[in-house]
Image (cartoon, rainbow, N blue to C red; front, side, top):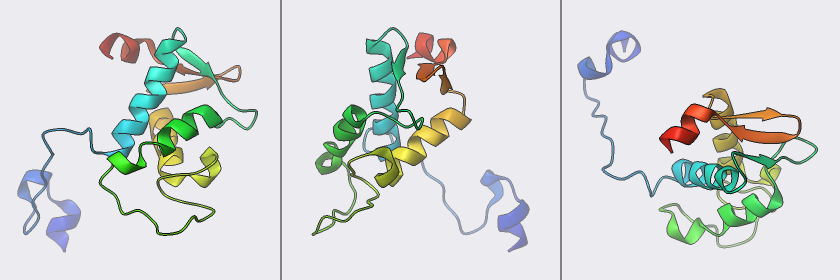
Length: 124
């Protein structure tokens, strides 16, 4: 247990960490691409809801990606889902993606709009 808690990634015993060749199947990366694409289409920023969430347009686009993602689909509609929803509050994976993008400095909220950081825009 001490090895898992304190060792470097390369020194972990009985654990293999691998990165796929393509991240396009990752829900987080697909949702992040949608967020950045929306901002880039509008000169680097897009409007947030009054609560500070992503717009229903983005939520709908992200929900439409579900058949393309390698995740289990639910047989019935549920009110709060990991990979679909009517708004960001009901769509956990999209909400987590937005929060991660904000924490990591990819996007930031200012004056009711989400902006993509200039260095990210150049790289993207």
